[in-house]
Length: 271
Image 1 (cartoon, helix red, strand yellow):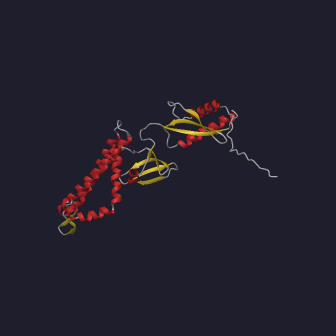
Image 2: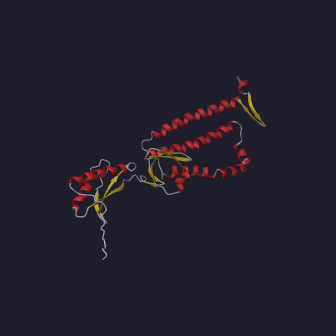
Image 3: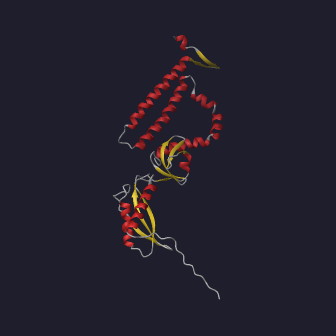
């Protein structure tokens, strides 16, 4: 048996890759996978820690753990890491210059995981698109748009450019729906109907009082807005659409009209 374990597979100068090296690597990686699964279950069972923070802790552990496994694996093959790094310093410099954008994405990924400014489940506005964060990796972040299309975003874009995080503080956001009403309408009735239409929607928060006001005297209509709070940021367009439908139906019941644009035309008659 010892003869088979000492069998040399590859020889390169002073380096000899033997069968027992392959067997040792196999055991190292199998053990590493088992440890990773155990730690993952342990971290995600921490109920007192938020889900997004548990994900961050696991990702950081995964990164440093596999880095340690890689170093230990190379040492088990008899490779001196310090000599390898010293001998390839010039190569690493050139490689680093060519891969600086990728390294920048890795560093940005670590920053995102550490500072907590962006977490899994957050609703963000990126390049005029509303997306929900699905996964934060070390080089890229996966987000899902409202059309359920998945977008892979380099992490450096999330740290370099402005990103609106609608759920960063976990505080509900305020939204509004605007409507135009004909001149001569009962203003108090209009504002009452607007508030009722918003308040009765199931996704509008009841612990915040909805309110309406007259925003402007338009050219051909009075312009009203109703303000409300909601936690459903990702589907807020549907919430606004439902409220508009309720407003329209309420206006029809009370004989209130949304006017068309009006223009007065003066015709000058010449002799």
